[in-house]
Image (cartoon, rainbow, N blue to C red; front, side, top):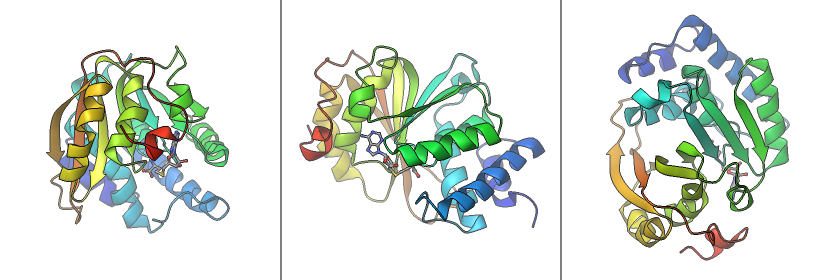
Length: 241
Ligand code: SAH
């Protein structure tokens, strides 16, 4: 089977032409993911085609919303709770010019991130080990990003408190969500307002590659986040706003 064929075909539907070097990078990423997964729990999805669709292509679907600006060389993106690098690393491979910060609470996973960053020869990738609750209070990261992404980290009311403080005014936060989310969004309304956000759109991802319902929840940052947020570690999930 040709290298990353499913991913390549899926990306075309998003209007993205991945070149052979990029497909090779995705292939290396896949091999390393599988290898390290024997020692560290990085992913439950391991099949070659499944990883191409459910991890890699899924990461690239945020380009349905963000396109023009992502190709800008000063574009700053943070992936909160990146785990093995999803969605940050696939986006970095597809858009090498972005400045990417990968934030992950687990040190072991961050070791993998350093390894893959080096192996793929990426530049302008910063790997931070820490919790969003703490890192979002550091001035060099607070309200410094054009785009904040987070996949499979927490329910929306919690996620908004972890993510929106990183977003600059005029920037956006996109949460990648699966399945029924109407109730989750209703419950997040208060938090979105408190954190300085404004719900712009809930966009369905309409690719036949995905059999489950996938949506992008797009929240614009319209006013500064009060310094009391995020609250101390654990609170955003224990007592959602
Ligand atoms: N985004 C990846 C990983 C999802 S698993 C993917 O979609 O595959 C959720 C990850 O978020 C875990 O690796 C966990 O360690 C991290 N995480 C959870 N809460 C966090 C927090 N408050 N700050 C930073 N990372 C967090």
